[in-house]
Amino acid sequence: MITIATVAIPGSLHSALHGIGEILYMANKLAGKKNFNYSILSPGVEQVSCYTGTLITPENTISNSSQDIIIIPPILENMNELIDDKNLISWLKEQHKSGSIVATVCAGSFLLAETGILNGRYATTHWNLGEKFKERYPDVKLNIQRLLIDGGNYICAGGVSAWMDLALYLVKRYLSIEDSLNCAKVMLMDPHREYQSPYGLGGFPKSHNDRAILNVQAWLEVNYPESPNLALMAEKANLSQRSLLRRFKKATGCSPIQYLRQVRVDAAQMMLEQTDDSVESISEYVGYTDYSTFRKLFKQTIGMTPSTYRQKFGLRI
Image 1 (cartoon, rainbow, N blue to C red):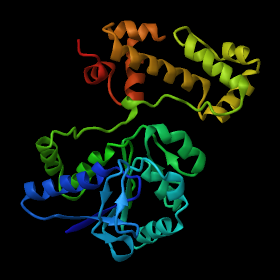
Image 2: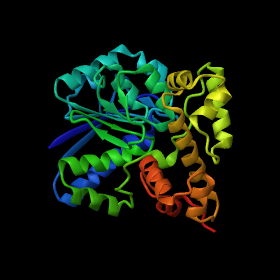
Image 3: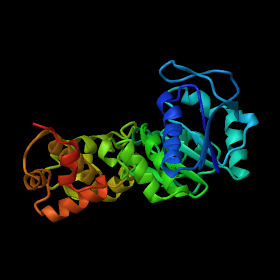
Image 4: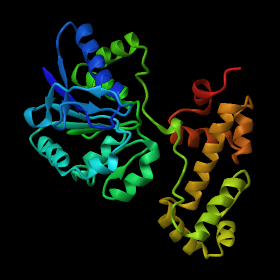
């Protein structure tokens, strides 16, 4: 039997604490056998106040429990205090060292990264926390596009609702794909989510103080339908091309061309969501006269084709 426990951290998502257990319970029922034993732990207090203010009474404390898998749930507040909680961080590190798999959801990856376990390894977190995560943990290979990353002895899931994906993944990893699909069918869940890109990954850093680069970013966000080349960007920044490349990379973490591509994909997403324009005309509008090139770039960035994206997120008129 696999023992799994989620730590009820103050400010965490109440639905995740119970929801993970319900999916695992469903897996047990459908399999006709208790494969998972699930519990909720606390960092040491009798009751924990969740994000909504709901109080939860855990079955045990972290100091009196040993688990095969420890889950850090989505945390929507108190992050600064939690990152500085040396007892919690030390406990996570000790549990991982003793053989427990640590799985995190959303901002929970910050606590795992704080232990140093993720240094030099791939991880993900909520797409809107990517910049903050990279600044604090530069040694972690952040792949913000992925919804879930399995590092073997750790697992990171991306957005707030990714606790559902994590629970289904645990069923798949420890039971079978068929069991995971059966759970998803009964609970009307999407078992095929791989990327969080469709939910928003734009927003390259603008908190830097390089005015020349900020000017180029703003200019690209208006003139992306044209064909801005490196020479024109350098002219707008009043820099040499070499200086532009160096400073742009330092300020935003990507090249000017990569930035332009992301701006175009962001614009295409909005048009696919809000208009009934043909995909081909959208491709041309955002700067790609060759539709096959646009389709390939869109799929690489978002994880699905433009047509599939429209089917999932477009307006229903």
